[in-house]
Length: 85
Image (tube, rainbow, N blue to C red):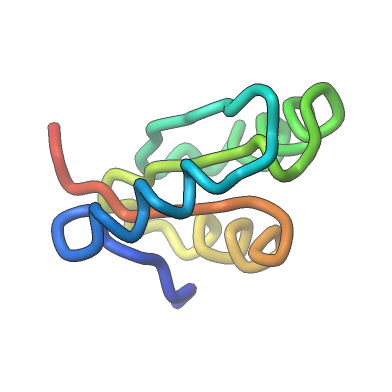
């Protein structure tokens, strides 16, 4: 599994990381187990805004394909765990 900071434990660190981004626009996705569209969403918005603009809050996904996608893009985008509703 991909190592992802959890909002519940690291909200201050996550907010600091996001605040330090130099991206003029930040594109945020809150998702859970969306294995069919996730890869295309990342590629689409990365092309438009750049990888540094992409922020994903994952709401407790369980599908292994999701974490494979996160691993493939781990050096480019930011992914955080969020267990809120």
